[in-house]
Image (tube, rainbow, N blue to C red):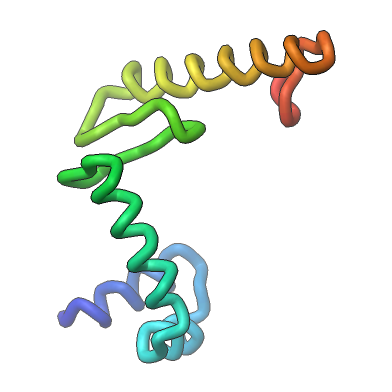
Length: 97
């Protein structure tokens, strides 16, 4: 199975339309966006996958245990709550209380 067929198969498994996926891969529609993402990753120092950036501040590089991902998510949530407290005295931010 070729790379494109693998991508199409994965897209179908994720619930995307097969023909729309084939058409998108054949076009250059998202080329600029992909190159922008690649440049952003280089600037961040990303050297492998998976790589998660939570709230623009908490990086998780490589395969990590669930606890590492949970800690990053909780830290971002805490920081968002703190910044919301500064703005309006509330303990909620974007639907997270």
